[in-house]
Image (cartoon, rainbow, N blue to C red):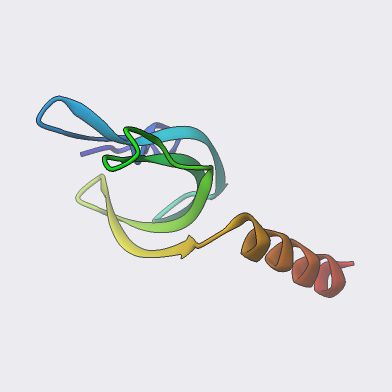
Length: 93
């Protein structure tokens, strides 16, 4: 497990094949609880290629000096991401 929020990743391999490829991340908060947003692609076996960019927000809790994932929210499309950005822009100013 990871004890530094900056080192958290969503890269995931199965049988030596990269299934989830992390492209970027931003640490939104860290401490006893860490919140990160990731930009990633997922391997689509049927297409034999990676998907379009996807996004996920993950919350991790530090237990015994190791971060463990507690919650996640997947942003299902670029359109949904834009709507989220627009709503936050209105609320935050």
